[in-house]
Image (tube, rainbow, N blue to C red):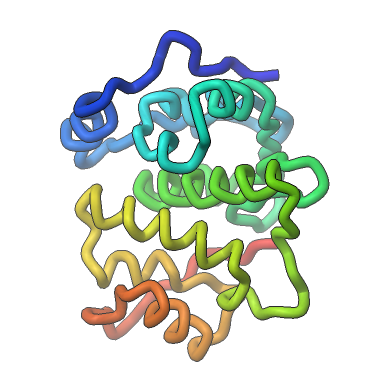
Length: 198
């Protein structure tokens, strides 16, 4: 399917921290010129193998290599942010979102979705309909990793609250998610919701 990360391992104490520090404005390389269709992870997120956070998500280099090589990415031409297919672990990304979202949001979203890919590999149900979105263990776990990474790259609590303000949850659910993740200390008055997802 896609290219793996062989030979591109991030060494301890270098790589991701330095890469992110050096790219404050253009923090990641994203191929925004793709058209609707099927791709590999590295076709869209060209420097994904340098993301040190991946070591915290996947068990070892072998598992990470397998995910990088075999995870399909579908760019879809309808309103959509990002999600993982519970059936096959592929990642869906809305074309308009890919073209218009900030580098920071796209970076955090792919980290969040890779947490779901890991959960899928463990055989977990990503979309437990018995619980609301903000109460699903799979979402909380993925958001905990994402929020920790958001802080590490310098996002403020206000930025993180805006990131968590998605269109498919209610204002009350948003408040509950923000509280649960411990990032509601400084919210902005007006928050822009992200586009809808499937």
